Length: 238
Length: 384
Ligand SMILES: Nc1ncnc2c1ncn2[C@@H]1O[C@H](COP(=O)(O)OP(=O)(O)OP(=O)(O)O)[C@@H](O)[C@H]1O
Ligand SMILES: [Mg+2]
Image 1 (spheres, chains in turn green, yellow):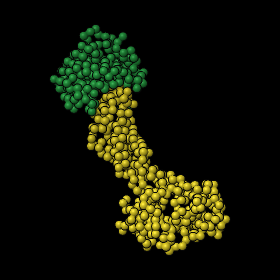
Image 2 (cartoon, rainbow over the protein chains, first blue to last red):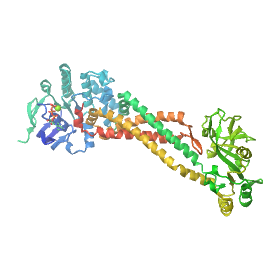
Image 3 (cartoon, each protein chain N blue to C red):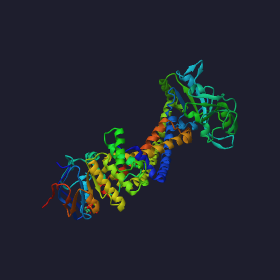
Image 4 (tube, chains in turn yellow, cyan):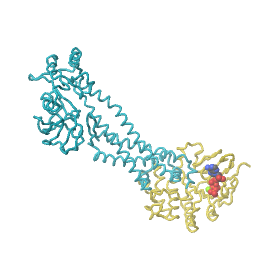
C-alpha cells in the first residue's frame, strides 16, 4: 500500500464567473521513503496539490489517503491534529516565528506531541544537528542568514517524525549557492533518515536530486523519470 | 494543545511603542474605573449604615423631611418624655435629645470658608446616638465645638485643620475645637457639634429643629407615631433613623446607577483601545498564524494565544492601576450637600476593578483573534 494515495482528485476554484480547474482528476501514489519532485509551469496547481496532500486545503472531489487515513473526511480540528502527527511542511520562505529562537521554532511542532520533556529536547537537538545548526539554536530568525533560516524551517518540518514532508519551492528565495546546500541537505535527509519527501520546484537541478520526477501541466501529471520502478501513476480523466 | 505563553509575551514586545501606548491608555481607563468603583464603595459604605431602629426623630410636619428647615417649640422634648411611656430611661435619665440643626457658612482657621452642618446638642445626644464616640479631646464647653471625623472634608479643608484648639467662626461667633468624634461612618461624622444653648444664642433662636429619642424596643416606635398623629395641634411628624437611611439609599440609587453606567462607558473605551492595538498586531501576522495552523495548531490554540496577549496587557494595566488607586485614590474625599465620604479602594474594589480590566483585555482581543482565523490556511500562507 502506498503512503500517499491520491485518487481522482479534482480541485476547482471559482473566481466570479470563471472556474479554474488546476487539478483535473489526478491520481498518484507516493511510497514510503520516496523523494518526489514536482515541476511544471507557474499557476498549474503544484502548490494546490501540495496543500491537498498536507490537509490544509480540501479537494473538490476525489479521495486522499495518507498513511492509511482518509484525510478528506476529517474535521478541521482533526485535520490539524493529523498534520501535527503526520506532516512536515517546508515553505518557500521559511515562515519561522520571528519572536521565537531557532530552538523554539523547531520545538513548536513537538509541543503538540505527547512526549516527555526529555524526549522533546532530544528530538529538537537531533533535528538541529541534522541541519547543522546546533550552534545557532538560540539565535532569533533575524539573526540568521536566509539559508540558515531555511535550514531551521527544515528542522522544524522533520522534528515531529512526520510520515511525509512536503516542500513548496524550498530554494525559491535563496541564491544558487545556498540553494545547493539545501538541495544536498534534502537529499541527505531522504537517503540517510528515510524521510518521504514531496517537493515542488522550478529548479531543474534540484528536481534532478529527486529520485522520482513528476511534471504537472494543465491539470494532468506526467512521470518524467524514476530511479526506481515507475509506480502507478495515472493521469485520470482520459 | 496551546501555544507557549512566551509567544504571547514576546508578541507584545514586537511593537514596544504601540504596546506601551496601549498599556498607558488601558492603565488610565482602569484607573478611572477604580475611581468610580471606589466612589461607589465609599458611598455604599456610608449608606450601608442601617440606622438605629430604636431612635426616632421628631420634627415639624411643615419641614417635609428637610430637618434643617424644621422648627419646633423647645417644650416638645419634655412633652414627649411625659407622653411616651416607652422612652428609654436609665439611671433616671431619659434618652431624649433636643437638637438644633443648621447648615451654615463656616470660616476655617485659614480664612477659607465652607458650608458646614452644625448640630447644637445637650449631654443626652451621645446617649441617644449610640454610634457617636469621642476619639480625641473632650466634650464641648461654652463656645467650643466637637468635630466629626469627616467634617473637615465636608468643609473642603484638607486634614490637619480643625485640630483641637483651632478656632473657627460661624453665625457671628468664634468656636474653639474641643475634640473629635466618629460615628461608625454614619452621616453624623460630617457634622460639627456644639452646645445647644450656645448655638441658640448665636442664631438668636429659642426653638429647636428636632428631638431625637430612643425607645425601649423597635415596636415602641409606633407609640411615637401615634403621639404625632393625635396631637395634630403640634404639627409634628416622626421618622425612625433606620427609615431615614432607607430613604437616603433610595435617593442615591439613581446616582449609583449612573456611576455604573460611567464604569461601563469607560470600560468600553478601554475595549476600543485594546481592539485597535490587537487588530493592528494580528493583521501583520497572517502568514504566521497560517503557519502555526499548518504545523498542526488548532484554531482554538491560536485564539487563546491572542487572548492571552490581550489579557496579559490588561493584567499589567490592572496591576499598575490598582497600585495607583491604592496609593493615590484611596481616601479621596467626596463632598455632598448633606454629607461627605471618602473613596474606598478596598479588597472588593480591587477585585471589581481588576476583573473589569481583564474583561476589557479579553473583549479587546476576541474580535481580532477571530478575524485572524477568517483567512483559510492555504491563502494565509501566501500572505505578505
Ligand atoms: N484561493 C484561490 N482562489 C482562486 N484561485 C486560486 C486559489 N489558489 C490558487 N488558485 C489558482 O489555481 C491555480 C493554481 O495555483 P497554484 O498556486 O497551485 O499554482 P502553482 O503551480 O503553485 O504556481 P507557482 O509555480 O507560480 O507557485 C492558479 O491559476 C491560481 O490562480
Ligand atoms: Mg506554488
